[in-house]
Amino acid sequence: MIKVDNKKREDLLREKTNSEHNTRIPLVITFSRVLPNIGRIIRTHLHTLHTSDRMKEVFSEPPLVACIRDFNLQDILVHKKTQ
Image (tube, rainbow, N blue to C red; front, side, top):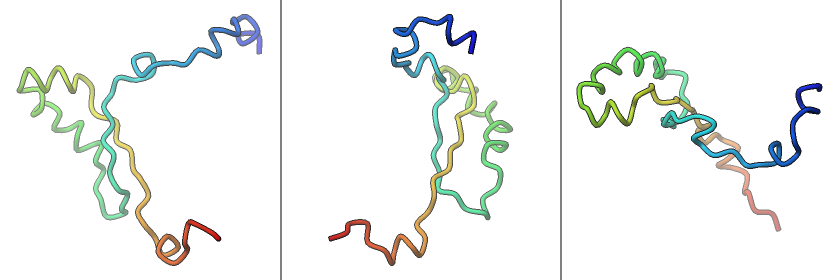
């Protein structure tokens, strides 16, 4: 609470840009239990991407792996729009 009290209101309300948060490129995949650990595979083979100067510049850090939920039975049976 002391740290927050010492900050100016304008600084706290200012919207942060991506460069201030994280510069890693997201890799978004659909979640499945049968998928292997994608993050570990990417970190293991990152040196292959770094053989190209352009890819070394783009992927200076490993991509951020994010999973989205797949369609399930409820999505198929229930309509999102109600009357």
